[in-house]
Image 1: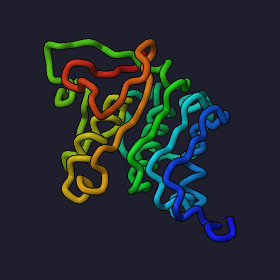
Image 2: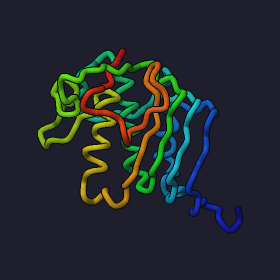
Image 3: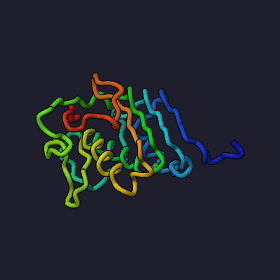
Image 4: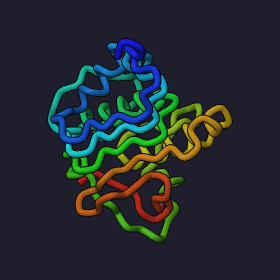
Length: 184
């Protein structure tokens, strides 16, 4: 540790089963761990308490269209901010967490869900406003990964997640057009 006291070369961090909740993302950003773990590529947060009823302090000024889900939406927006701030992050896994119980997959092959106004709401600048887990994933895919300044750095970024009874899903090859994820 004496030669690497700031964990400058740490690439993978396994925090599976540590009772971490959504405050992890706040503390990580607030205390500047994204600078300490600046080369972190893989973060495993499986089997924790992500999505539980813990209270976070994070808020923003983007509109919330499902007022009854306000705290869950702010948690997703905080997680998105965490992903954006950790520029080298390539893999985040959040399987086996309580967040999985809040969403279900709405199988709908009749429309392109990732462009539907029913699931994706944009601000005046055309940016997706996170208002559910599906819009969170689509925002990462369409705005974070498809923008030229991120393509090179974020190529292959992937989130491993569960959704109710559908387990071990991942953002990289999720069927966005026909399987929107909605609040239960």
